[in-house]
Image 1 (cartoon, rainbow, N blue to C red):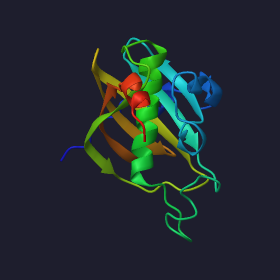
Image 2 (cartoon, rainbow, N blue to C red; image 1 turned 60 degrees about the horizontal axis):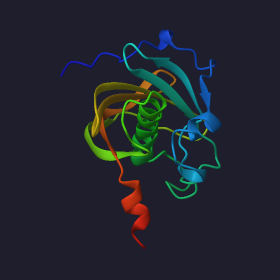
Image 3 (tube, rainbow, N blue to C red; image 1 turned 120 degrees about the vertical axis):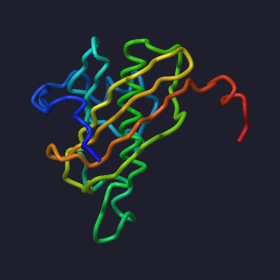
Image 4 (cartoon, rainbow, N blue to C red; image 1 turned 135 degrees about the horizontal axis):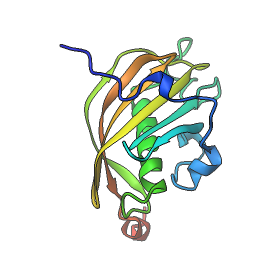
Length: 169
């Protein structure tokens, strides 16, 4: 099977050029504390609907202690969560969907191609393919040191916030 082309060449963005820090990302994404999976956004291309963000992983990330003891590896689900947060940030920042919060609608064709560990800078490149009022479709590629570690397609949907808040747990 032929290797998929890069969404964006690594030379097109500068990881030291911060477009949005964690505080700014928090204006658009609701995740906080352990679930905030982005350190910064460093690239936005409005013409091609591409966004690049990253997470600097530390020994203090919540999953390190238990996944796996003595060999901490970033869980694949957290890689996908980081990709979803990049896509959600971009869609909300640029008002591409009428949604207070964008949630998961699905994942497709996800492949894990490498390991991610504390001390790594986990880079996510998201390319919005389709944006409709009720769903966005985004391809993503994730890297450590320009090595592809995860890729796939995610779908985002607006969450019914009022309904969810009215439901007692």
